[in-house]
Image (spheres, rainbow, N blue to C red):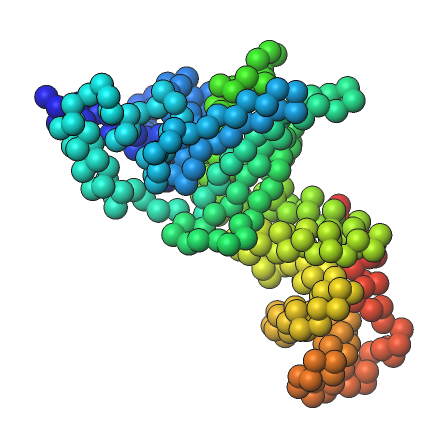
Length: 359
């Protein structure tokens, strides 16, 4: 009897910590059981709403600070909030045999969870009050499965940002979006911990479902949801000479594009330009030189590009400063000089960065 009970509890545990982008194993409506997304309101999962593979979701409010701290002694994949369930939840009340069986079943099940290439995890949710508005700001980490990121890629988005993305994608990908759930808007109780936890998990599943569809994850609407705001902020900071702050924002945009597989686009080249300019302004010349080299490797495969001349000029200058070989860049510059307008008329890398429209 204990073994059957342990199996049932483990079944719930594996659903709450599902590693396949939020897709449920149980049938939903009969026909398309494997493809039916979990309900965005998560009515059947009130106990383990904030359980995470790598930690505990925290809620903070600028009006009332309510920290949902995890129990002492809970560690690893089995962490949960007070009142949760799992291998550690049997202490004090249940039999030690059942606890051991749960722990053994959990260890066996870890290897059977389907890994994801990219995980979306809401790590915190803060209630923000402004002049005439109040909203919840969700911080989402993009995590590559099976790797440890010293500097993870992160975004902060509110409900209206997700709603705009959902609306744009449904206009363009109506058929693909038909089976993807989106959390409903509420008229009240938007700022309770329970609502925020449900919505956080729904957003994780929403992004995982979108990322699982190749056409959607490559679309400008999906990609720009993640990094366009960072690019715009970094550009503003660079234009105002706040290079240290801009550098951190360019770096986060770089990590976001890297994890999303968007390293061959003009946006990524602009990001490398921003990193090179900020590093140079901060007298970090080796780092700036490395950014130029990476950009030139990408540009070499693309042929003609408006940023080729500015990157070559910056690379020659930085290579001379740090004592690196600049002969290839000088030869390419000579080819450009013979094929096009005088290089003196071309903008610098910084000028290209400032003038680039980001919409």
